[in-house]
Each structure stands twice: as structure tokens, then as C-alpha cells.
Length: 147
Image (cartoon, rainbow, N blue to C red; front, side, top):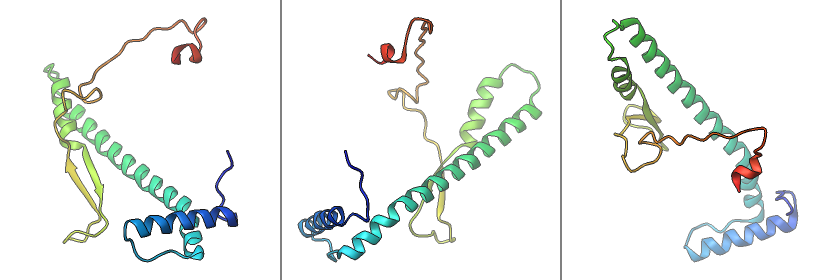
């Protein structure tokens, strides 16, 4: 399968035509010129890289929050045996979803942290379901596991 190249004239003419047909069908203005479509195509990779960097940065900040909460919990620990329950509730208070907003809030923020919802008991990931799998790696291959 050939790869897309924004410098390939035929590929860009096709993308521009498809984009303009979609714009016409959904009444989206303005119709794009070949030059503007090429500019948009040239900005896709940098936009993806920027988005990945922002998300990675937010993940690192969340890790710092979790580590700070665990350090605080371990320094306050008195050995009463309720550490697991206490740690779970503390992490729920510490962890946040962070929404990246297009328009800033009244306070001028573009990031909006919110508390985590309670786990969904029907969700495989949320309910902490575990599947134990033991394989003899001397006999099994990845291909055998996947098939």
C-alpha cells in the first residue's frame, strides 16, 4: 500500500476533491483550495506530536500527584492494618480526569481537572478483573497464543 505524501500532486488533488465533496454535502464553508489543503496536510504530523507531548506531560503530572499522596500516606501510617482501604480512598481523592478546553474558563484556565467517577461494576477494567494465564515459554510462541 503506497504511503500518503503531501508533496504528491495527484494524492493532494484527490484529498482536496474528497474534502470539498464532503464540505458540499454537509454544507461546510469555505471550499478548500489545493494550496490550503496542502497546508492543512502539512500540519497534521506536528499537531499529533504536540498533542502527544501535552498528554504525556499531563500523565507525568498525575504520577507526581499519586506519588505525593503515597508518600504522605506512608508518613502518616500508624500500622493499624487499614492501609489498603485508606490508600484506595486517598488515590481516588488524588487522581483527576483533566479536560483540555478550546476556550479558557472565566479564570483563564485551559485545563479543567475533575474528580474520578466511581468504578462501573460492568466494566472489565473498572471492576479490577484479573485473568491468570500461565504459559510454558519454552513451548509456546506469541503466534500460538494469539491464534
